[in-house]
Length: 148
Image (cartoon, rainbow, N blue to C red; front, side, top):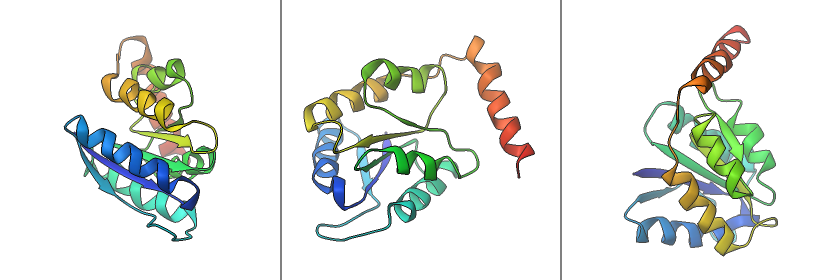
């Protein structure tokens, strides 16, 4: 799977860990920044990555910052994107199975590298289940269109 990944300076080290982990699992990880020692405005990274995911240039995206919250807020501003903060395995799984999220966000100040890699595995192995969730995801898309 082709995965977009980006971070701010708070999560640079975690990003490198996750890139290695994804590549070890046979995925292609494309780095959207930031670079080592580079201070960035995380909304710029989140926006650039989310646009590419919305245009289906990537199957999924991973955004990392101090808490994951700001990245999720920004990514969710891009039409067609559903991003969720993923700090535990149940919510991570449900973000895919119930909400069909294409972007997961995590905070390097919240989760350690081993937990983050585990959450990435849970997220990558989970697929949207449709069923009763389909109407809810469709309604999210309708609301998004109404707000444009």
